[in-house]
Structures are given as C-alpha cells and as structure tokens.
Amino acid sequence: MTAVVGVAGLALAGCAGAGGGGGGSSSDGGGGAVTVLMVGNPQMEDIEKLTKDTFTKDTGIEVDYTILPENELRDKVTQDVATGAGQYDVVSVGAYEVPIWAKNDWLQPLDDYVDDDADYDAADLLDPMKESLSSDGQLYALPFYGESSFLMYRKDVLKQEGLTMPEKPTWDEVADIAAKVDGAEPGMKGICLRGLPGWGEMFAPLTTVVNTFGGTWFDEDWTPEVDSPEFTDAVDFYVNLIKQHGEPGASQAGFTECLNAMSQGKVAMWYDATSAAGSLEDSSVSKVAGKVGYAYAPVKETDSSGWLWTWSWAMPADTDNKDNAAEFMKWATSKQYEQTVGEQLGWSRVPAGKRASTYEIPEYEKAAGDFGPLTLASIEAADPTDPGVQPRPTVGVQFVGIPEFADLGTKVSQSIAAVIAGKGSVEDALAQGQSEAEDVAKNYQ
Image 1 (cartoon, rainbow, N blue to C red):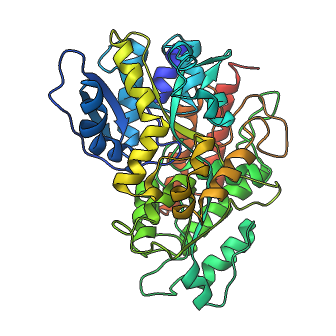
Image 2 (image 1 turned 90 degrees about the vertical axis):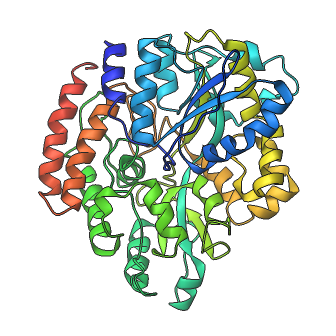
C-alpha cells in the first residue's frame, strides 16, 4: 500500500520548500554520462552553468540535465523512481520523500560512497540535514542546500514609515506592519505569502502557521484536526492577510512568484524559505539587494515556527551508472563546489545550509552577514518531532511524514486557493479537508 499511495500522492505534489524556475537543458552525454533530473530553482540553475568547465573538465563525466518546475518535477521523479523506469541516475528530492522512498527500497544507500572519503568530509554535514535524509541509520541522499523559513522585509520601507521589525515577531505584529506598509511605494503590497495549490507550495508556509496557532493535521492518536478551531483560526488569518495586504493573483503565486515580487520591489515583506536570501542579495538579479532585513519565522503560541527542508540529490536504486552518479553527487554537495560558486558567481549564491564549515568561510560570512547566522540558527531550532503545542503521530514541520500527505495536502490547498480567489469559505474548505483526512487516518488508527 505504501508504494501505491506514494506514487499516487506524490505525483500531485507541489513544492516543499524553496522553488521556482522552469525550462530545461541537456548536453550530448552518452557512455558514462550522468542523467540528472532536477528542480528549476536558482541554485540548480547555477550548477548547470558551472558543470562543464569544472566537474566534466576534471572527471571527463558529462552531465545531462533535465530541469522542471517543481510541480512537474515531483510528478516526473516519482514516476521514474517508483516504477523503476531508470531514465535518470540522479534526482532532486527532499526531506519528505527520502525516508518514505528508502523504506520502499527505491533509493541507493550512500554511506559506502561518502564515509571513507576524507575529502568529502561527511562529518561536516549539519546533523538536521543528515537526519532528514536517513532511514534506519543509513544515508540515502546528499543535501545540496538546506533551509528553514524566516521573514524577509524591506528595511528602508519600514524605516521610512517609522516602523521597527522585532527580531522574533509574532504573526499579529506582522499583520499590523503589513497594513501600515501596504502602498508605502506606488504599487507595493504589504506582504507576499504563497497561495498556489500544492502540499509544499501553499502548505509549506501555511502548515507552520497552523503549528504556531496551536493546530495540527493529526493528533498523536491519528485523529484528524483539520476543522479544529486552531487550524481554522490559522487558515482564516493567512487567507485574510493575503486578501487584505497580499500580492495580486495570490491563488497562483508560489515561491517563484513571491521571489520575483520581492526582488522587484513589489512587496514590502515575504515569509518563505531562508534559501531565498541569496537571490535577494544578488544585485545582478535583485533590485532590493542591500535593502532587505531578516527576522525569525513569526510565531503565536510556540517559541519558534520555522520549517526544516533540504533539496538533495538521490540515486534511484535501479541506475546502472552508480559510480559516476556518486561522483557527481559528492561534487555537487562538496566544499569545493561551494568555493566554485562563491568565486565564479558570488558568495551570496552559495548553496548553504548543509555544512558547518560554510559559515566559517570569511567571504561567505561577509556576503551573508544579514541572513547567514539567522539561517543557521533557524535550521538548528526546527524540530520535526515536536513542531507545535501537542504531540504528533509522526515527524514533519511543514508536512506530515506519511505517503498520503502529498495528496491530502494538495487537495486541501486547492480548496483554500479557491477561497483566496473569492470562491467559498474557509470553513467549508476545511470541512471537506477533515473528511479527506479521516479517510487517511483509517490507515493508521
């Protein structure tokens, strides 16, 4: 049942952390070439630019990339890995998929490739990243970058309006500031929040709001709580904040759209992935570089609320190109690769959040001075085993670590997106979600 539900559910998934981008590219490859299926976000687009003149030049191994937007990526990677199609040697996966897929024997264990490689230095990988990518004590994916979530805001706009952002704001404080900076500049909205359907698009940030409002998808006995007062209050708050002070077309706005809105000066605040900061601080693509401040993920009933995620590289168990695939994965997650990105593309663009040593590089410390330490602190504060105010039946901050959640979260997000677009009510959307959650709970009660 796990395998069947995993395929059906994950094929419907949205993005689970940072996301965005589109397009695709490939090299001629052939022979020992490594085929890589990856999500089209800025960090992945960077690695495509750098591969030929670094990894391929040094190893002779060509890399054939396929790049897809996240919703399409999840469908494609699930079909390939779960069915054993064998089209790709390396795939982009996250902290949600890896433990589930490892138990289904869909992924190749990686310990033998990294444990004895002193140059790779697996001990340098941050413990939260390794733990999220492991199952039964074995490592099944290598983190490309890690992230939590935090609040990004325009320092200059808040100063202009005589406002101060607390280091650890509450959601009520954020809503108050959003109202006051809405319209502070021509066409500027107060905040951007994901409204695009998807268990990992909308519900990545929204589930953290649910957690800190005192809600949960399921209690420790697998009783669904989707229509509980706390869950309802959180969704009401989120939807109303978007409707009153959020970005236009919010029901179709995900990570990519909010990144564009923030980097182009169209919104004053944005709550999302810590990994977005590197793009915001890159003056070649962002109009607001140097103008952005960063604060911890907003809270209400909990001490912290940031999520925990890593986009990582995994090797499908059925690939017949394991050694070359492992070489690529180690290079793409190495200290050497981070150095290459910093030197050639800029230090703010380093795919950080996975290695302790990254935060000791002087050039990176300087470039990430406003967001680097906060990113690391947020990652270390995230607790997938206890993210809310009550015991949970399984792990996950911004997701529930079961195969069925991909389908459940996506269905509920579609109903909420309709409410954001002006159709229906939060109460009706969550009543339907409660019914769908009850069907899932029967598998575990």
